[in-house]
Picture 1 (cartoon, rainbow, N blue to C red):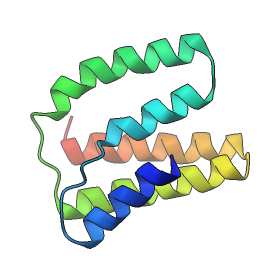
Picture 2 (cartoon, rainbow, N blue to C red; picture 1 turned 60 degrees about the vertical axis):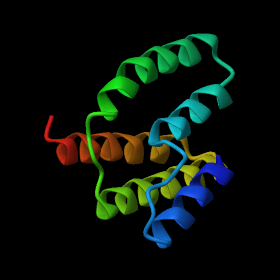
Picture 3 (cartoon, rainbow, N blue to C red; picture 1 turned 180 degrees about the vertical axis):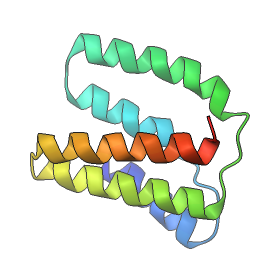
Length: 102
């Protein structure tokens, strides 16, 4: 997960679109749970959203916001602060929803 976040941060800093997709980070979190149900659920959501996200264009500021949330989530995961991870994840999902205007 650290590698994914770092790659996205470097790309955005260089004003390039990140190669690592946003959804990859969320799949990595699901896999880290080692819970087959959570993994299956995230894979299904990724499949559905993957097609949808191809229709949207994210601006540099969108990518910066996504990176900020991913970095915060990663740091809370490292600290094993599940409550804070949940709070930030919820805020992140609402933020993306608003950016996509869906």
